[in-house]
Length: 380
Image 1 (cartoon, rainbow, N blue to C red):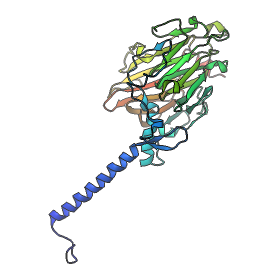
Image 2 (image 1 turned 60 degrees about the horizontal axis):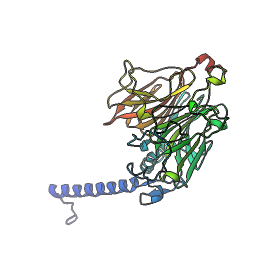
Image 3 (image 1 turned 180 degrees about the horizontal axis):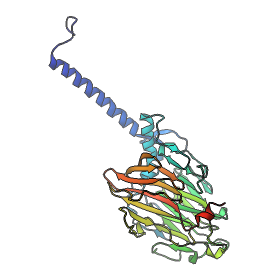
């Protein structure tokens, strides 16, 4: 301002505009840094800074150095964790919540649901202690016949959980996202898993007669009805542990108890890739494809730009957890951007389709009921 008049020089005007732009840009960068340096403490829900070591996760290289050596490791080839689908998404949630309060992609319809990470509500998990879990899929979702949790071990506490034996007709599947989970089969004559002949290993272990195994990221265990197993993690492993738990009532293929399936332990990295005619994705089926197993879990990989050729529509129910990457998912007549940490429930005959986006592989873990007569399943 000079003599009550605005400066008319174009050069002066441009200088003022550039200065204002730089100031605004610096304020935005500082605000984003402050937001990205917070995450949620699962003990009390507080937002903490990265300087708070009570929730800091060790690096992937060092996190197993202090573990007690169990008698059998399930695959030591796990070189990375699915942290984006486990505790890592909590940090991203705090960032998004600070920038876009009240916004979410989560949606529940009559026969499908999308549960984004910011919608997870943590609480009780059946048959576990010292954990918190978000029940992301349940029969409350208009007919889902299974329940799925994303579970996190509380920091600095031991985690103990009993398998499916507490409910005689239940079966349970666990997939480790990060950290380590120890599985022990006790010598119980009433358990269906009390003998080596009742536990199927999807790969070789160092000591095939042992009853104690350690699951690293990508490791999994299936527990059939009346199979007791003790799971331990937390303080004993000096690290964060998160995993997926799926529970459902077993649907027998016959009334013969001898036809109950075996317990299964393995690691997705050791399961061979299967060709799928007409499709681009890479498929791994984690459980045996025999009639005694009433469901399976698939790990499916897509490179950027790859997509499902089939526009699927079938009676099988699905529960899906995005493990890595991002893409577009069609659910009925709606299209959603999805990324690691998202959970999707798909009921019978929901039109569904997926395409991978971004610059790196996308991967998801998919539940699917199998090997049962639909007429019998839906007549109860």
